[in-house]
Every structure is written in C-alpha cells, then in structure tokens.
Image (cartoon, rainbow, N blue to C red; front, side, top):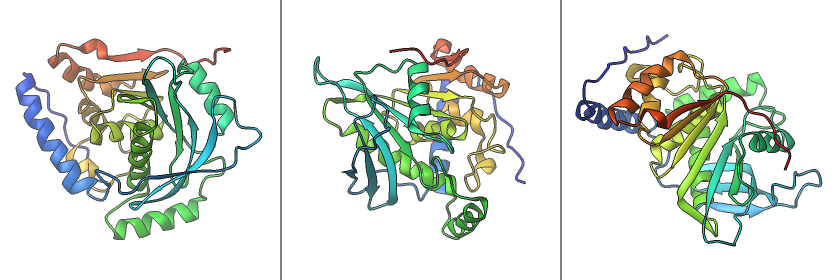
Length: 272
C-alpha cells in the first residue's frame, strides 16, 4: 500500500495557495486525467415515471454524454416563481432507493422549490454490481489509467452539467450532497467544478484508504487536504466529522472563515 503523505501545515494563506495550485495540477495531470473537464454533448432522456416514485421527483431519466456511459437520474424541476432557484445534486450510494433518498433529503431540509437531481453513478443502485464484476471492471479500468471511482466521478461531473443547464436553475448556487464514499466523490466533483457553492457529506471516510479509490492519489494527498481545496466555500458534515478533518479546519482558518466548515449532529426526516 502506498503510504499516506504527511500533511503540511501552513503559516499563511499565500503559502497554502501555492500548494493548492500545485495539488490541483497534480490531480488533473496524474490522478484524474481521464475525467472530462467539460463533458461533450450531455443528454438527458426522460423515461416513463415509475408508479412508486416519491412526489418530490417529477420523473426518471437516462443521463449520458460523449464521455460517459448512460446512468440513471431522478429529477425535480425548479419552481418557476420568483426567478432562478438553487439546485441540489445528490450522489446515490449502493442500496439506496428513491424513497430512502427522499426521506434523507427531507432530513437535511432541502427546500421543495429547489431543483433536485439524484444521480446513480455506474454500478450504483438498489442492486449494485456484484463483487466479481466490480473487480473485473476495476482491473480493466486500471489498464486505461482509471478506477471504478474515477469513472463514477465522471458521471457526477456530467450530472452537474445537466443540473446547471436546467431551466430556472441558478448555476452559481449548486449544492452537492452524498453519503459515505459517495459524499467524498461529491467533494472531488466540487474540487474539479469550482462553481459549486457548497458540499455536504454524510458520515464521510477519513482517508482514501477507506475510499474512494483513485490511482496514485496517496502519492500526492489524502482526503483532509483534498477537502481543503474547496475552501473558503461551504463544507458541511452530517452526523460525523472525523478527527482527521481538523486539518481541513486549519486551512479555513487561514481564510478567516472557520465557520464555513461545520457539523450537523443528526439527519432526521421531517414531515412536509
């Protein structure tokens, strides 16, 4: 296993900004080079609405681009009244169904007039890939310089592009949310797409040793430093803030905005 690099502490914002630019370059050139910066020909094709789809969602669609495989998304259109509305992208995890996701979004109190999109990255769903297929896919992806998680990150980037282009959505007010490793993938999407306003992670991993798996990532950084790349944008943790992210708070302090990294103690569904 590649040893985790030591995380440097910075005495000034200027010294951190130098490291930040270096790290962004390394991520783009050495780790995530195959993830598209600007997806080509993003397509959203509506499917018939499932009978048991929660009322929050207006329908189910297939999302694809010239750079990614087709994946499933759920979509709620933004309210038309009052100008453009913020948008939320939820990155689904294995085993989550639409009703469970609706309950979770009510628990974190996502307003109903926001546009909401749920993306199921490839291999994620109520019935996920089995372990044998997952291992074979990972092996084949590594030949091309990718991993299953880097391909899933590409799917999330495409979903962000589709959400931002929706009618009545304010592209400058996009929030991304996910649970566990999916939350960490959402974090990386916000690192690559710097127009994302806020990242919310539920029970996230503390290190890439737990996931997500990106080739070479531990040669250059680990999750607490990667999370600092979105500072001073808002970073919110639900339920658990691993101690390792105290390093991330140190970077927010350099910007004079430590409160933009915060923790919410619990997620509980609220009745509408």
